[in-house]
Length: 375
Ligand code: APR
Ligand code: ZN
Ligand code: ZN
Figure (cartoon, rainbow, N blue to C red):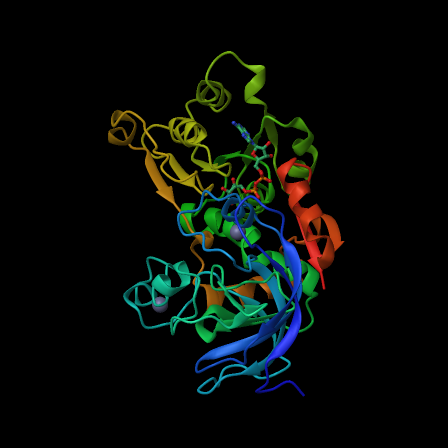
């Protein structure tokens, strides 16, 4: 019985930027008030983990435990937690849903800001850490820290899901897949018979395609400089493909020609400010909407001529696909169980947790859609 005790377990530590993670024995303190300790059973690697490890994240704190696409089982709960019990199947949420901040009270957004400050500082809401290694305190990451056998999260940063769903699949709903799927359904609100273009066919772009298809789009153009991505995109519902490298003209001009004036909806799933501009300018005059999903490096700025907006194009962005996290992610798990949402197809690689650095390598060379690590 581990309840109320410090747990010793394995975790992948980011001791400093630009260095491989190191598997270490760590201590995980019991959860405090309104906190939950979770045994992580599967986690995937996302670009944000690599971005922070790369040292370019202004909010990066070291040493820390990265990871935010995970799933597991509640081991124990702290005082004042009524919603969870040991044994519950759960997914950590890097955007929480507290239910009472001004963002949670607005139907227009999902960016709960209740613990934004401490989360950005790599701390629990009370300003402290639950992790130590070799006598040193470790920072948390994105309120999740799933690269550990055990983690502690705020109860507002966790949702209970149907135990019938496999951890190694539903961990993907912790970030990339939910983000792309929601960008199409919640942020763009894609309509039946509309035309869409998706820039970047990684996990996020594929999830956008899945959302556009679910919304009944009639044309879904996949845009990528890596043509090996086209086949999988077709499986998710893309109907047409363009490789910008094959043209001398800007890609927005090509897309406008292909669609008799431009697209109803475009999505940037790369994180490049140039393709963000191209995506906006590929929108149809009068009504086209472009959604930014990819995260550009710190300090980057977007630009276009104001005339693009004056003539009726709309530029939007989304975080975690606009989902109000605690109430929506369990519904996406049910959708998966009902076979109305694909997850297995995103998994290009599976590795034991101990091979986590190999997973980062696959991400860096662009070989993986998602690598899932099992504990
Ligand atoms: N034009 C078209 N496609 C491009 C370009 C470009 N200039 N540059 C890169 N791509 C393609 C890559 O070939 C790749 O298929 O974009 C795709 C990006 O996919 P992944 O690297 O697998 O990224 P993903 O996990 O889908 O995340 C997308 O969202 O999380 C954010 O900022 C993060 O960059 C990441 C983005
Ligand atoms: Zn809130
Ligand atoms: Zn992510």
